[in-house]
Length: 249
Image (cartoon, rainbow, N blue to C red):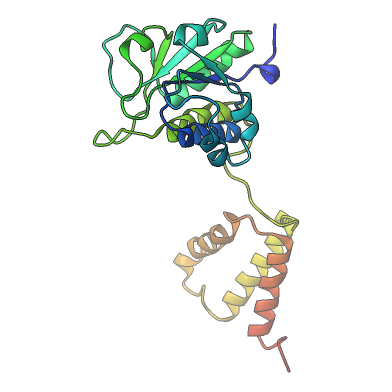
């Protein structure tokens, strides 16, 4: 059984695409998201189309490797499971996924060895009901109800992005420290003790009933930030300067 690491990405099937520029934009979006198998069903302006290469932006290889089919039935013949993208209800009894839900489902299927396909419709009218009837499921993206329309390149990028990120291990948040080392607790405590001592000397913490709360607030200000060793040293330098122990002469 194939593992998640070698799960085959979905192919992208464009049904009746009308403009070469839009096909190129789809190829570019595919490249961004690790997709490579582009299938065209009855492209209006024929194929190949130089306008597609001009819009592909480093995805010319996907354009040049695209396969052309006369019918959607032929384009999906080798696939195990297909998802039809649509912006509206089609009164067909099928599972309806969000793009994120599709990604989870498709990765599970691909990891099980299934070949997956994504169906996208024409620029002006999307997929026909007869084409959606050939799909295993549908994808509808929850967008502003007042404007759910996407151009075909946007649609491929949105769905492809969810596929890619579902298998990506990049953390949601990272601290860009540019090689700086994070300050240890001891280093931070030394600075805070110096700060609190200085505040005591200046009678900032002179009200007994407020002292502990104020110290806790001061500590929390610095403790919740991921300070580096260089930043702690800079804070020490600032205090020395302000106390007349450093700075330009």
